[in-house]
Length: 282
Image (cartoon, rainbow, N blue to C red; front, side):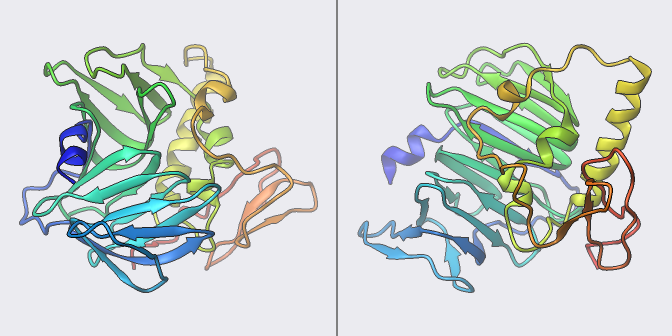
């Protein structure tokens, strides 16, 4: 465990708040797809993760191949974990320590945000849903799905990402790649961390708003060149186009439509649609 804590350093923080901050040190397994284990910090014993059981720091979560997990904290912070991932919560704070793999992180507004750490770089998020993934060469990729993400290297160099932007940090944590713009609608509609669970992600309305804003920019020709889907999805599990989660349907015109708890509005030529008027936080 000591070795793990030394390795964990790249940080992704979410929603810094001036209110009292509740530590993010436990979460309930709300969905487990295929295999996931809990590794006890005290004696390294391994037990299968079980839906509705509570996971607590400083134990580790470890997922298997083609597996993923959704965890919900008491304050409704959502952590979704991809395949072949190892992570834990840092005791006493709101930090995720990521050793390998991928996580989607979304805290509700006002709960104090949070941080994903890996090898010394910090990505701080204010009102955001983000995905962090450790790539095969040890570099660290941060994708902003909605809101803003501030990424800080261990030498305190910083950049600010907007929705639809991503950056890759070198394995030594010293260098940023160029900020890249990805097609948010194309990527989010295929990411298993977003659409690969039984229930819709609570921040989908915010992502939908970011998608619409980016689509407007694409139509207006005001965005720089978008990176390819292959570059944007590198290191992440993607859903085949023929498969849809149970809360999506095919409209008669073959568009994919989000089934809102309130109502559904098929929109031609839009592969993905959310009823942004529904408040998922209530």
